[in-house]
Length: 204
Image (cartoon, rainbow, N blue to C red):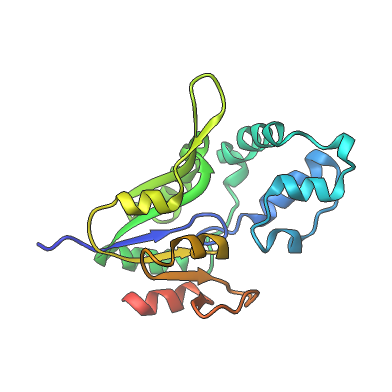
């Protein structure tokens, strides 16, 4: 049997609608009133906090991510009511029959159990593997292996990368066909995909 071709899929706001969770936590944690539009262009969350808080009250970037990683990204409880994107479940189940599917995410490895839980809950036995860009180093700090580097390391035919971040698409576009998940038409890029049905139709 011939080896399946590879498709690489983002996690946050591509497979699952997580921006509302992130916004609500940040607003409550820092007593600010960030808005949904602050999160639509993949702005770093610590920058959103800095937008609303005076400099002397802002946490350091390291402190922000330590708190956010521990209390949000590593919390299965906080993710229990997160919804899959429309038609994601049906499309991924069908894609998994034909292709080797990977999740590539900027989430840190400390949240790997949450990612596995969400995938097992909604699309069990469909994802071949998960790559988290950030992993903790012994003694503190993080090391990153970018999505591009991971995709390059995979042997075999690579036919698609699917992400809601135009920056990630730009980093990857010369490596394999890339598709920007942009259901609201914010970027209106040439490679924009408005729905999971549209993405599935390209490969099913």
